[in-house]
Length: 600
Image (cartoon, rainbow, N blue to C red; front, side, top):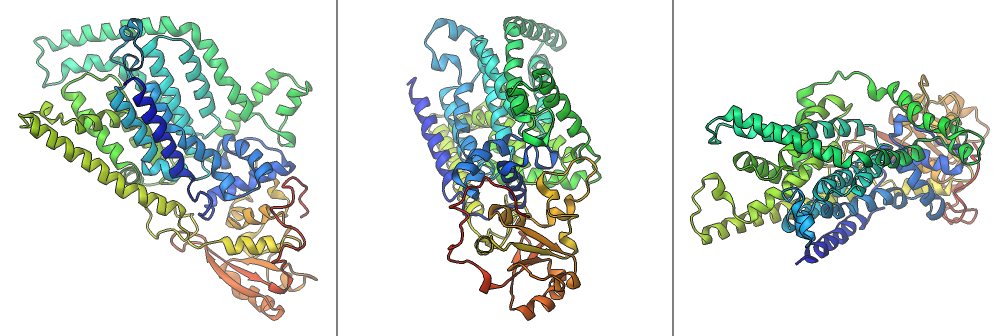
């Protein structure tokens, strides 16, 4: 019995990896993926790298970079690290497992026996992590949200493990995982704030229980005071036990923070390579990676004010939570109500409070109501959801006064609950796999965000690859840049060219992937005056006719591609087929090294 939950969790982890790896490279790159992949490839080709808020934390680019160098710059390799991290998330369930369930020693069973999950709840948590649609979809996506959520979940699991076993090494492990979460994405600050609030709720909740109206307490205020004192005493005991491990945990957290946030190459000073070579001191590097990063973040657009409608944003984000994690929301809601009626699981209420705070806070903090935020709303609810679904499947509705007097009724009720869970998963998981791999994607905003191209761009990619020797040209005001080398690195403070460059996505990624030189023409006269026009020209549809007046006379054919899920963005690609190397006789993006110097 002791090994069976571990085997089940390992099997669910294998399933999670399979769901995330199948057809991983088939879907066209989202604009956000193309943006991060572009500057990752620029770093591989020698441009240097430093934290820039426009592509969020450096963890994903720096992990993807060696894959681009050794496996080639493809959609599959761009998404692979996030996919693996998301696929391994079910393993975190073992950290929440109650020590008495996994250890036969009397010492372990005596330590906080009420903290943690039973065997069945551990497997349920692993199952939710494996098949929750939002987690599956964005584990197949080059975004930092899944790494942040998974690292935070592992850090929480190690913290719970430290409480349950009193072993200080788990505190250090929690620090390391928290440190890995920091360089993933800026909303790690919201995670930190919620974690502090969750700890406060965990300490104060026992004092609230006697005050609940349905609890029969002869002197509720006296009972609440006694419960608070007891909770504070336990907290002091825990703090005293683990305090010696805190400095080592902070040091463990600092290692990944400095490693990932320190600048690389010519992109910043001091750089990691300079510190490794002994040219600068480590204190200066640590200051640059920590204080310098904070200064960069605090002056970025992410810290600006928000002027959107809170109710609209809240409605959209809550809807995404229900679409992307309906079984999680249902299970957590049931566990919370059950805990109010019969308190016995100290993890449930604090984590539901974390989820509620996220649901209220993210509509205020986010700049767009994107479906990937549902990940951050669902993560704190996963453990309560596991508790809730096991209670439902075991038919414990009679705890709420429902009339289920006999064992047959309870078994029947359990079958209904299990069937509901299976139906929810059976409907949502295939849908998310379809949305995440089919090109073009379904024209419904289930989990796909609007910047997901609705057309298959593989013909565009092949055409740009075939034009790699002669290059491409961006035409018109929409694609203006002061010069073609300004996008070597993400924009710094005060630089205002980003808006135009973003209009070039995702084409800029395909151009960089092919190592093709790029050029620019602002209008028809500038285009006509060129001695030679590249074989591929990109134009905004609003300016395509003016370009066609010049290019049509020279034998260019044009194709329109929709670049947004709802036809909100598009590009017209003009191609001179007679000048393309479709056979790859000159060179191939797959055969040459991705390391080189940009020729534009």
